[in-house]
Amino acid sequence: MNVWFPESVYFISLGYAVVLMTTSLLFYHMIKTHSLEMPLFISSLLAIILIIISVVFVAAGIATYYYRLKELHAERKELPALHQQILLHELPFYYLYIALGIVFMIVELIICFYIIVGTMKEL
Image 1 (cartoon, helix red, strand yellow):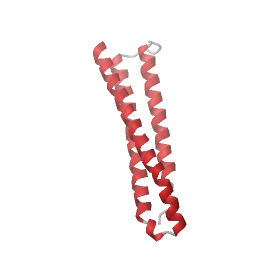
Image 2 (tube, one colour):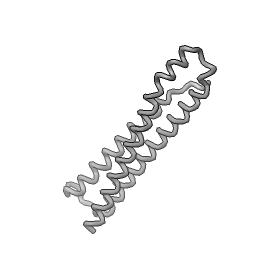
Image 3 (cartoon, one colour):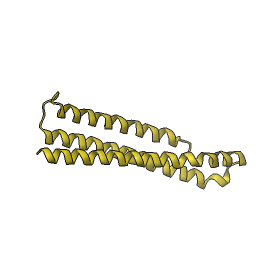
């Protein structure tokens, strides 16, 4: 059995995604409030690119987490009874983490959509 920590990898990628999302929204806000001078189309495009990179980080984190836990559950029968019980108790958290990651990606994509719509209205 390979030893690595899927939660750590997953939460690191979520951390990167949150930083990118915050940077994107701050950048877009600075353009909208004119505290930074830049064409709206270019700034919106950069904000959207940052959000897409953030979505890719979340998707990669979810995929890594999913495949690693799938591997753990496949190997579960070879583990002692105590470890089997631990894996069964962690199963709800497994689904929760994946669901929250997907919800986070959907929220990011909705924000991206509204940035696109807002930019198109102003052009």
